[in-house]
Amino acid sequence: MVGTMTATLGENVRRYRRRAGYSQEQLAEAAELSLGTIRKVEQGGTLRMESLHAIARALGVRTSALLAADAPEPVRSDDPNRLHLIELRKALTPPVGLSARLPEPGEEPSLPALRRTVLDGAKLYHADRYQSVALLLPDLLRGTDRAVEYYAEGEERASALVTRAEAYQVAGRFLTQTRHYDLAYQALAGAIADARAAEDTLSAASGVVGLCWLLLRQGRLDDAETLAMTTAEAIEPKMSTATPEQLAVWGWLALRGAAGAVRNNRPREAQAHLRMATAAAAAVGVERTDYHRHGITFGPVTVAMKSVEDAMISGDSRTALRRAEEGPLSAKGRRKAGQPSGDNWNRHRLDVGYAYVNLGDHQSGMDELKQVRAVSPEWLRHQAMARDVMRGILHKRKRTLTADMREMATYLDVAG
Image (cartoon, rainbow, N blue to C red; front, side, top):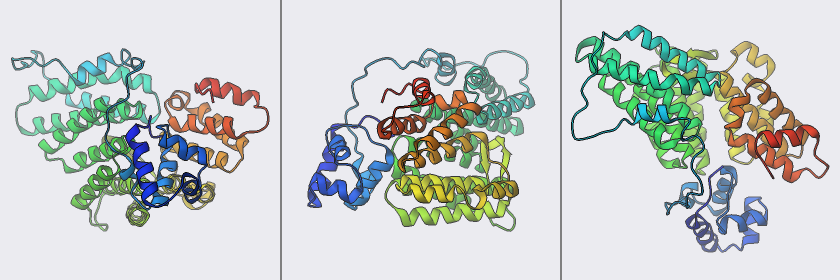
């Protein structure tokens, strides 16, 4: 969902609607949305990205043209996670004064131990164990800081920088997932800077993959697509000699570019970027979930899941459900291509659940929520998509809610 809409967004929709010669009713018809949705956005309400994309498509403009900078909404209350993440915040944003921070005395850091801890953090993140990630990261980041300060030159210096870059990547992805975007940006920018200083291009490009996801979350669609594709061009591998890791990072950059383009009403560009990702996945051959050094899991199933997500963004629930049952995503296809990471699979099943709800099959949508909750209850609470699926059930179901539906609404804190 795009957050609380400012008056500027409503004004932009109204301005482009009038320029196209549409009434609100005509725009609703052209975008295949309800009249209430058009009135809501023009009055400053909230919308899902798919709905905003449909409006842009009907008006013949990029989605980013409707998103404009404006004064922020007034703060109603403190972030409930502010105190929970204070140690991580302190590690990422230490106090800065007039004097340079001196290295702390101590024994030589163990880079192999730090790298093992980074790997543990990445595995915990992909297993959706967010509380464990939050507890692990502060000491890990301080440890990598000490290593960078300790080693002034040589191979150890480069190794320390890359290790800190990888720790920053775990932190950046975790903070993006939990919607602490400013802290996430700081972590990911630090990851890219450290990797570049160590001349590790692949690690830097992996940091860009994470940063593009953050930009997408912020609605910076042009920036996300441009950054992803310029970086992909810079690291484009030779298919016959590329390592699986090179293909995975390059393929994910193409997926980020496709995600930005499809959200920005650029379907041809999105298809071209998706073809790049498909070629990378074909070269990898099977789903690989062992790229924790770069925070990357990739393969044919991952690309197929993203094609379902793109169909949902385009408002085509029937195509999304068809794609979710064919090729690499079919049971036979996954037996052949392998299983994706748990977090990516769960996100995909929420897309499937939302498609069911859009087509009036509320029980199937509910079944998807229940299955995801059974395997990743902590992760589910952080997903705006899960709440959107639940809201769709509450709004569209005509019959009395089942006990399971009422309990899930309470679990996700959705009132209707």
